[in-house]
Length: 261
Image (tube, rainbow, N blue to C red; front, side, top):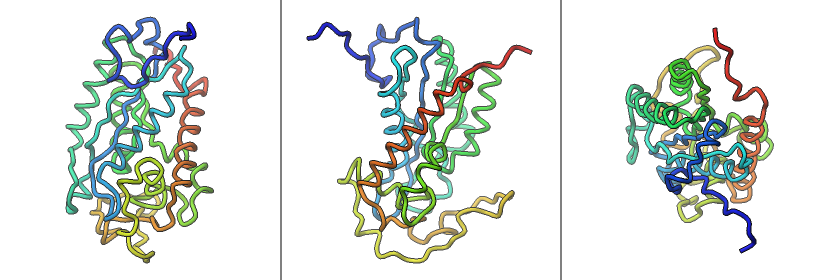
């Protein structure tokens, strides 16, 4: 024992009720990691998005100033994955259900005295819906509710780490690398097969949107080049994601509240 107070757990679920300090609640950033349960090709588990969003959140929280701490909620582990439903292992919500769940969490936090909520997204299929949900909850609660997708926040830092892609895709070089670093026991890279040309229509033409099944992009659930993955890249990618997220949160204007009308 060195006489220093013990650090409080950064995971919400590990705290006892007296450890939620009332004096710090207004300055605490509460993070809801939002993942998905969906196919990730033949070589990765269905929990990839949930695991990665949670890991980025926990690493960021561990580095946060205790005078303005970050608390990480248990993740939302199923979200909007309808486009993967033809492939085994996928579960999905609809938008109203996801909105209702997140709304109840945010309103609970507000009643407890928290003023800063970060919806940290780990699944591309959630991006559009989360922007709308964050907007509506910010209006309803009159407090900052922010949606952030970790690999987009870190996009500039991800690009030079990757060899075969310019950014994170799906069951790809980036996601496979991060899983190889975190949970190599869950990766069967040989099952991804040899490098093969895949459809390039992952995005519609600029300014347009059309919903499509994953089969539009890939016959095996992979979009990208997992064969170029490595655990070393995964470590660098996770570090870059945390650095970028913390830099974003540290901006003086990030949590400033709008003046009253």
